[in-house]
Image (tube, rainbow, N blue to C red; front, side, top):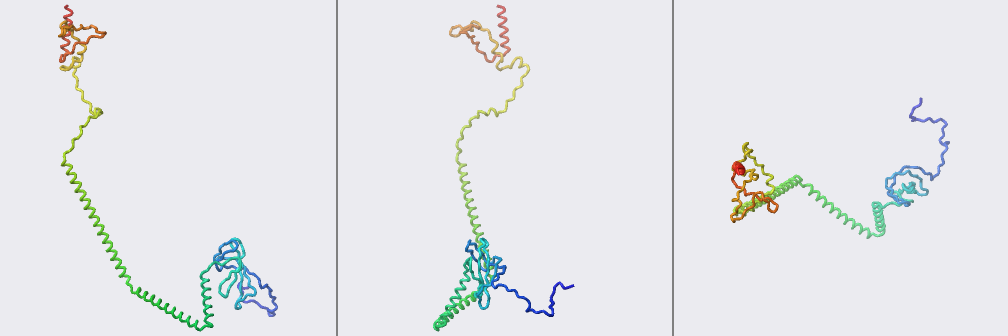
Length: 322
């Protein structure tokens, strides 16, 4: 049984590598590779922004007739994520970067422009110093002066760091704590002072109110208006207890009080009683004047029911005998 991982291959004795046929592939053959966008770009067709690091399935080919120091230059084809327009860029081994070729524009990059500007200035300086010795001397003087300024600034920074290194942070914290305590103490004293002032003001106000009340009490009280009786006060009064009536008072009547039947018993009047002091005669009992009965004799006060009954019986006897 053969091995699963074969390390040694069998070559027959008559093996000749030159007899192996070689594949003739075109030089501009394209390969499908997976890559990321090397810089920020914007599509010219739809204006879509493609940011650095976005992944694409690109086609790779070798650029014909372009070589830098023997290094081949490769071209990549990608498609816009929005409109599927074709975008191409290629390698730039001279600047260790990529260059946009077709379909998009490279976005602004300040760092790259700064590097290019520095390289341009350096190249111009070298060209000037190549044929002008006085320019070389002038540039050296400027460089020495700039170097001295840089050294002075560096020394100032070192001195500042040394001063900060000797700072006692414990003393700073202690001083801050003491200042905080003094501030709290001052605030507490101010609060106590304000409280005492408020208490004193309240005491003075109370004394003024007490003196005003004493003056009011010493002055004579004004006359109070008479209280008018309430018409509905009778409804609130308790009913008076009735006096118990005796049995003999029910049949005869009370003594010394106004008789209840005094209006029903009429005493017979004589002719003398009918004569008035002016000599005029009063109408007899039972006579009618202008269609109305004559008024009875005035009632005598203080006559009991028993005396009236006796007078009535006497009048009946006298009328019977006559």
